[in-house]
Length: 559
Image (cartoon, helix red, strand yellow):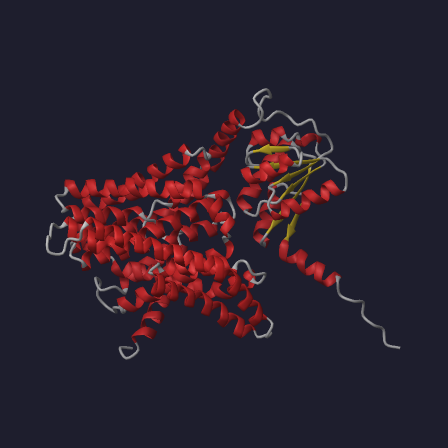
């Protein structure tokens, strides 16, 4: 066991994570709680087996790299630029507010200015792994809320890259050490070089990577070897991440994100995502185990009020700042609440930053323990906050519908007025599936009404003269305005089973005789939608199999 620390760390972490995750599942707690507890058990602060902490953290870094690569595969440059107006100022303003709150706590506790600054910065940045897991579980990656959250993360990532470069220089300045204190010109040069490297890296990826990576993937795919294709995907993801860090000084995570985004330009992007999924999930588990290993539970007993204050800054202070910023940009309350809850935790970059602070003698070990304790508690609370948000989703939708009714639609017309269409087909959700259905309905010369809340889709629909009701399809005012009793059918394209089920339930209550057809991605979701009142639920895999079998040639009859 001691002769093979890497194997021992992987096996011990995964076995303990499985054991405690199974217990957490039995107690109806998030599996994430089991992963963290597994880390505490194999950490240095509890008796018994102690895993190699350095190896665990490096394995966890691999998980974050693969996760960010997967995000990049599904996140186009257009998506990133579409949210820059809110993601850049929003992330910077939220980070500033959280940093000032952390510095305020440090001032109350009598900490040096440098320690308060590093502590506040560490509180300001959310965990990529935690946020993306929550987004993927709720299938929010393709929504405006998901795009804003990911764009927000990228801005935080870039800010942390700059902070890690400047931290030693700032520490010397703030500590008052005149011997090593850099001048303002030296600080400006350091900042300029760092920003310049990031700009050059992004330019290289957009100019060279955008062409070379999809081409290379296509060449490998033509060999017909699935094993070679899988190896090529991993080589590109890890190679670009490592090269970006070594050559340009950006983080592994940011390099992997851009590698994925450039690979997303290829038609083989879906296959690439599937190939990295098993490794991504396994290493993500090790990430949470590695966090648990850092936890020194004694700090909760010795400094409970300091831990609580730090936790309140993360969960309450930072979230309220994000909530106010998103609302100030005119986004819906549901979007603002989703972003606020998404950011109400801290993770990997916080640990890296506070670790550098300790190494540079800017931060005490006690402050690091406080941050780790608050971080772990915030990560445990985050799934519960999302569940709380899901419970209040209908109320948020109702408020958003009222806001839309007051602001959208022409001033001379009463908002959300009853449509005059009759015998029309209502399509709820105008993503890729909704667009295909809508084109088919129009092609058959039938009246079409679309229920959509994404402003980009709404604008495109109205440019084409297609009648659209703005709002979430599960809210009663929106469905009432769709005049369902006079409609011929309701086609629900929403992929989330819970949200789709709410649309079915509300629509059936308004029109008992209406034909309702919905989509589902699993047998459980299909059963749920049928119970809610759908006439027909199309299961994607089953319909795909049926279509493929219909294309089989008829069997030849031997003479």
